[in-house]
Structures are given as C-alpha cells and as structure tokens.
Length: 126
Image (cartoon, rainbow, N blue to C red):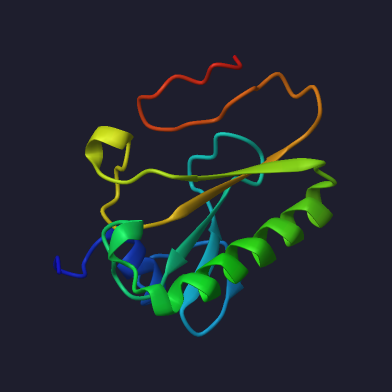
C-alpha cells in the first residue's frame, strides 16, 4: 500500500479543508474543488486504496450505498433529473489522485453534455 499522504487522506484527517457533504464510518463525500459541473461531488473511502480493484469486497455494498446517498442528496438539492458516476482507475484511464474515488455529476435534460469524463479524456457532449 502506498504512503497514506495523498490529498484525500489529508482531507479525511482534517489537514485540508473541504466541503464535506456526506460521512459515515468508512466513506466521505465532498464537493470537487475543480468541478466539471455544478455540485460535482466525490465519494472517497476513508482508508487508502489506490483503485476500485483494491477495495475489499466486504466494503462494496457500503461504498455503493454511500454513492447512492450522495447522489440522492445532490438530485434533491440541485433538482437534477439524472447523474453520472465515474471511476478513473490508473493513470492511463485518467486517475490523477492515487486514492480511489467516485465522481458524481448531477445532470439535467438538455444540459449539452452526452458523456462526462475527466482528466485528459474528451467530453463528447461539448
């Protein structure tokens, strides 16, 4: 396991301020500091795992529930009628921070975007 000094580990330890929108025993939800869309959020395990493949299966359902809870809260808050959930795993797939995190993008009908991806991969809807 990598040294647990990445930006997300530092946010989880309270060393870096962040807009926390969700927390439970094992996961945290924050607003992205460089949002692709308004209210773009991240759901991050509190324990450091590099990619989704490194998360123990025993945490899978809980991670999914955290993603659902954040998504439902964002839909309610923003009156969105849809959302995307995106995982970038490894640098070749656009992962910039080597701590697994789910991107949640609230969406609205006719928002001009067809597919949202991050970090060097083209947004085919703009």
